[in-house]
Length: 177
Image (cartoon, rainbow, N blue to C red; front, top):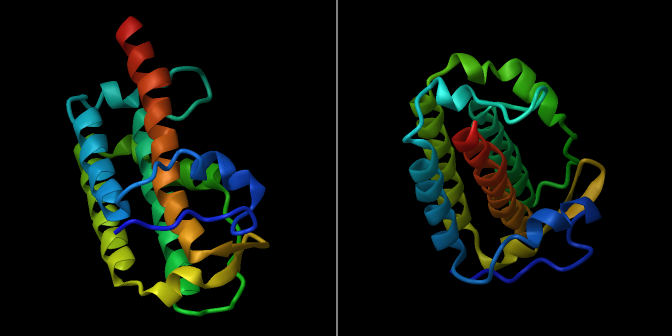
């Protein structure tokens, strides 16, 4: 399924950095490949290695992975509501608060990877279920107008963003520590 790219005005300017990271191509394939790629990248790490922070005050690898799952749930929920025509404005959230109370550091890395895989599977099934009209629907989230299409792209772009950070700031830094 090749998905049309969202246009300026389909999402808040802040999200451009994520949307820009999404390549052209089969959207469902991207969702599936990301799940496999993130698992392949992180599964060799021990729980102790996944507690690594590249700097004081930064999230650990486990916290980044927990954050990815939380945000995907939130974006997928917004996608569901907007795609189904619900016009109720959707509230903002604070990612740092979610990480602070998520207790991700107390969990096993394998459990966090399984959770991400399950969340991603639910997202894939939701995306497969949407018809052409659903992709065009607009709603309000965090006091900004957004389309269902833009939300789907945000899901992929957000993971790509954190995948890059994991590779550059965590895994390379850990290898040189």
